Length: 357
Image 1: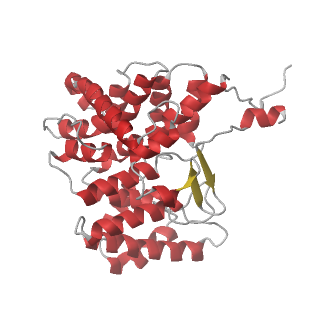
Image 2 (image 1 turned 90 degrees about the vertical axis):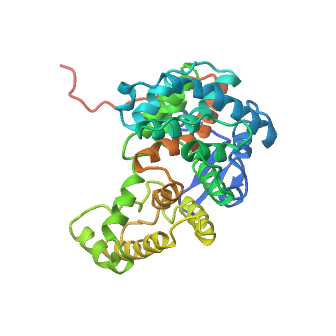
């Protein structure tokens, strides 16, 4: 490997994003074999085999205890913190957790967003946060802490599918940030906190909410074609379409659409909302192909993420936080992988300023 390749490339066993063929592989398993088939806990065991326990049951128990430890910070919520956006408040709570490179820190970082996001949603609405329960899975407990009720199996499965689907996705902006910070040996907490800062940006994790604004504006399936045409004629961006890496349809979109279909089939969501989304998707894809034939603008993960999280009861301003609850597994795994290399990430810049006198 040349010196330049050594600077810009990273070898990883964690995930492969095949943009040309629309395929995502996580630890040797295609997304199809994981989403809706394996639990979040079992995928964490794949991502961190030399950090976490190897069995799904053991990881479930360890994660449950870590949620309890993280929840202690909720007692320190105050009006100043609650006046922040939910993502900023999540970042502030995450900053209070201890740092280091040991297993307990890794577990705490992975567990914390699932404990903090429901607590912040409830506290910002003037309701009392609900503590975690060690007898539930990670997805089930996150939903129970949100609503105060025992969630149905179809809702648990839908959230579990989402957490698995977004758990890792190559060297995206937040994951690369986590690896850079981890390479300095700053610790897992520092790496996750930096990654969360990157995820906050609207070009990365802050985009799913506006998909629902688009659906609200369309209102009915009959309006989809005309509304989409109007947006394109004005040069507006259609939310939930196009991706920097995928040259075909984002495989994560299909995983989440399948989860929504299962949820709708058992009455777990408003079927008319899914029908509206499907009408908008059809209209948008047809219009984009006609208006921009030289560009590949297919459905991406954000489109069905918005619909799924809405169906599960999460408010729009919490979508980035729920994304973090899934992606944090990948952040910690990449941080660990980078630490194991023992190398500092130090890219070179290309100077384009004026010549020295």
